[in-house]
Image 1 (cartoon, one colour):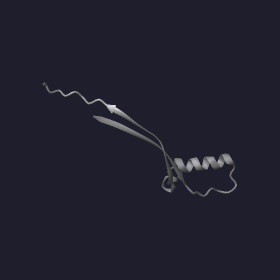
Image 2 (cartoon, one colour):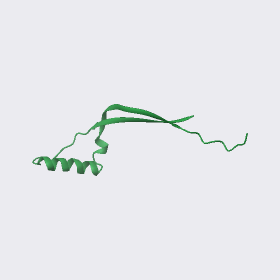
Image 3 (tube, helix red, strand yellow):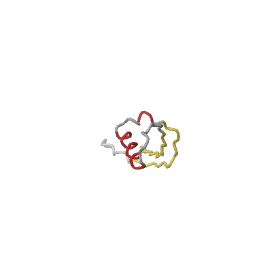
Image 4 (cartoon, helix red, strand yellow):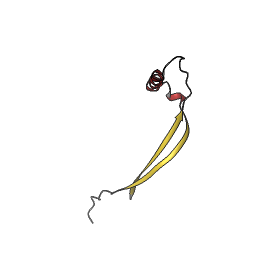
Length: 69
């Protein structure tokens, strides 16, 4: 019997970045999104918490053998 198990986890990451002074809230959000989209923040992200959300299993029917009995 073959079973496919799926585990869903919520990963919380944290990055400490420098943002230029004088930006309004919208510009700060855009600056963070731009840094993330460019890949600059990926190497700075540290996983500090993983929360288990769910686990499920699905039975996969085995293919019938083509051998005659």
